[in-house]
Amino acid sequence: MEMNRLKHLYIEELKDLYSAETQLVKALPKMANAASSEDLREGFEEHLGQTKEHVARLEKILKALGESAQGKKCKGMEGLIKEGSEMIEKDPAPEELDAGLISAAQRVEHYEIAGYGCVGTYAKLLGEDQAVSLLRLTLDEEKKTDEKLTQLASSINLEAVESEGSEEGGSRSRKTKTARA
Picture 1: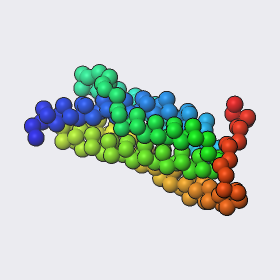
Picture 2 (picture 1 turned 180 degrees about the horizontal axis):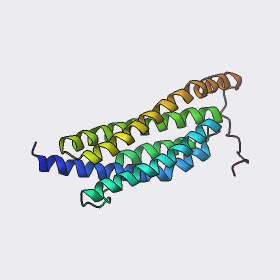
Picture 3 (picture 1 turned 90 degrees about the vertical axis):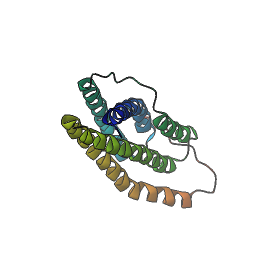
C-alpha cells in the first residue's frame, strides 16, 4: 500500500473516531442518569471526562496534520448508542438495566479499542510519533475502562440474577431516582 493511501485511510479513521467520541460525549450523561448503581453512574461520569479529553487529543492530531476534525458521522457508534438507548427506553428493572448498560458500554469500548489500535498502527507506520503517544494513551484508557466495566459486571450481573429469582415473572418498572432528578 502506498503511503499516501495509508495516510488518507489514517485521516479518515481519525475523523471517524472523532465522530464516535463526540457522539459518546452526548450519550454518556444519559447512561449515567439511567444507572441505578452508584458505582456504575460514577464510572460513566468519570469516563465522560476522559472522553472529552479523547476528543481534544483527536483534534490536536488532526490539526497537526492540517485537517479538520469534521467528517461523516460514525455509523458504528451511532448504532451502538441507539441499541443502548432502546434498552433504556424499555424501562427494565434497575438490576437488569444496569447489567444491560454495562453490556452496551463494553460494546462501545471494544469498538473504540479496535479503532484506536488501528490508527495507532497507522500513525507508527507513517512516522507520526506525537500522534502515536496520544493514541496509545487513549487506547490504554479505553482498555482500563473496559476492565472496570468487567469488574462492575461481576457484582451487578449477580444482583440481576438474584432479583430475577425474587420476581414473580412480570416486568418491573425502574425505581425513580429522586436523588438525582
